[in-house]
Amino acid sequence: MSEKTELPLDLMPIVSTTMADQVEERLREYITNKAFKPGDAIPKEIELAEALGVSRNVVREALSRLRMLGMIETKKRRGMVLAQPDILSGMERMLHPHILGIDTRKQIFEFRLVLEVGQASLLFARKTEEGIQKLEGIVQREALVQTTEEKVECEIAFHSALYEMAGNETIKRFQAMLMPVFEYVVEYETEHQFHAVGSVTHQDLVDILKHGTAADFASGMLKHLEPHTILLT
Amino acid sequence: MSEKTELPLDLMPIVSTTMADQVEERLREYITNKAFKPGDAIPKEIELAEALGVSRNVVREALSRLRMLGMIETKKRRGMVLAQPDILSGMERMLHPHILGIDTRKQIFEFRLVLEVGQASLLFARKTEEGIQKLEGIVQREALVQTTEEKVECEIAFHSALYEMAGNETIKRFQAMLMPVFEYVVEYETEHQFHAVGSVTHQDLVDILKHGTAADFASGMLKHLEPHTILLT
DNA sequence: TGTTTTTATATGTAGTACATAAGCTCATTA
DNA sequence: TAATGAGCTTATGTACTACATATAAAAACA
Image (cartoon, rainbow over all chains, first blue to last red; front, side, top):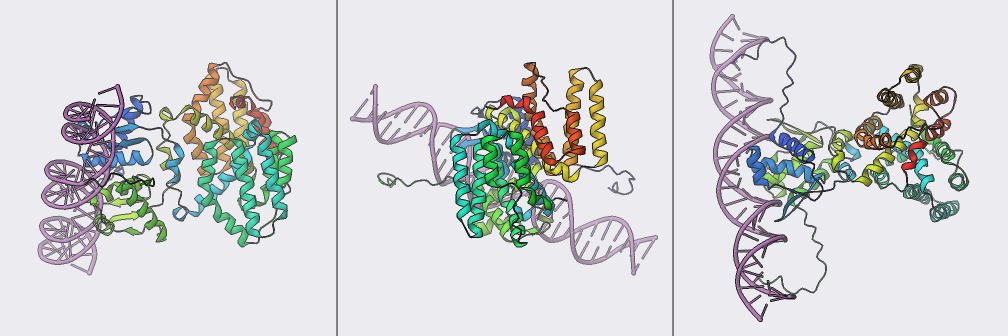
């Protein structure tokens, strides 16, 4: 005792990692190193507990985490099997804007902007006649509506249709995840009577889609979103 | 017994959600609804267990998940406090390429492409003289190197510098997360002697950065990456 | 052979007990 | 008085046991 006194050293990181953390780590290694395929079975909880020399309780905490992330699935008697995790379902769980810092939210807003512009490459590889017609339908409807609500609705519909046409499920879902966070910006803008439309309209974008190139579209979308970029530092 | 017999009803969705799942959900609600600030204390495990009418064990599984995601932190006697989760650290945990499906990896590759192109908007809002000089340094070095390794290195350095200059930490880290997955595409390309360079070179990109517009850059980057887009369907 | 019943088993939940570390109180002492 | 340290308190961490539940697999049955 009394060893805690006067070490001038500053190296005391001592990673107080809990058993569950370690087991989680080991299980990840185990799964990836063994080159498991999705569908392969995983040892029973008890066996894992014995093999690792910890209580079943600890193993369950670790498994619970992996299960949440979709890395494993468990059936009542059949045991556990390695699942095909889809990245996003795991990510969604931590996107509650309330607890995110203001700067993080800003960055997420930018993130969405970037996706919107960059999507041009995919759009031109996969655009279809029906997709374009759908977009035109939205544009036409947009010209008629009056209320702000309806306009916002059309706005969302238009951009959703774009993501749809881009045909990348991962990006689409990721963007959907970002939406709740994104809304705070929309609130901010409506609050500030901020309804300026960029020099490029939805109609213009559709035209580019029909007759232009991917590069045209990227720069067009950028101009379309330009009013929003004033939020950038 | 024998009550399980002959109900002609077909409404038996009964989401076999486990207690831990439900508790996790309730805790999320609790945290977000109560408008907690980071640093606020959370009731003790026993209190939560009693309040929810479940065993402490179940509560611990749920808490373990939240803890993993960085939503809460726990100290030995002080109890648990709400933490400031950063989205990415949570996401990183599930990006082990081995277990991702081939199609998901393709989509992730596209994702990175999209980021690269869309970043133009940020780049032009935040470009600096030093940043550009750094890019030029890389371009010059690139002209001298011979081996494929070195070229790849320069490639990475150039694009990393771009992300750096874009100044969005979230995007940058997200992109870094995607890298391991991205590498499989690089492998694929090198395997197929696939070293075509787009019609726009790094040097061109730097020039656009200096004298062009964001829109120019977006379309330039798109052309620069064009050779890769053959992988798109 | 096809259908129903039973059985065995792995996960899900509850509860108890103890270890451990970290804050707190308070007496001791320079 | 202020600093030190011993001892107590308490919330989390870990272990163990017991039982519920669902279901795959086996056995019984038609």
